[in-house]
Length: 124
Image 1 (cartoon, helix red, strand yellow):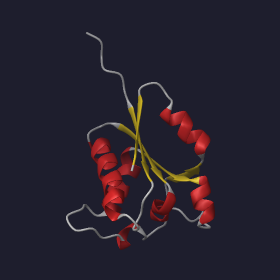
Image 2: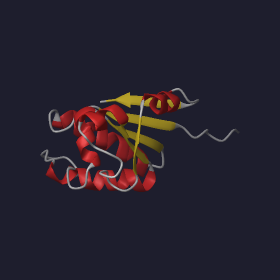
Image 3: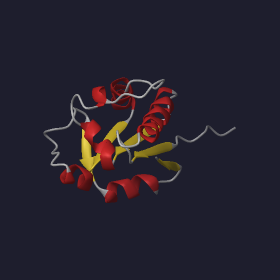
Image 4: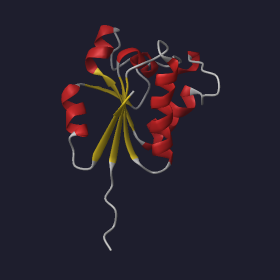
């Protein structure tokens, strides 16, 4: 029997506090997958880019949702987290501003990830 191939799950969060349920869904799905051993690449885009900054996730509240700081910590420890280059630039966020472990990268890296063999992409 063949061993199952590793599969990359790329999750893009496009919403932040402006759409809290959609934002929370992206974080929850990505962190659940990471906790289950799935290789996860989590992208912060649009308003979710703010969560790349220290302390910003702690300001997010949604009843019956896991705290975003816990989910970001899990994603940073078991996957990778990327803030969109253009989204960060529009918010004057630089690599020196973001949480340790978060990279800033653009569309070329996103396309490379989502078109890699056995990748699955979800956009919230």
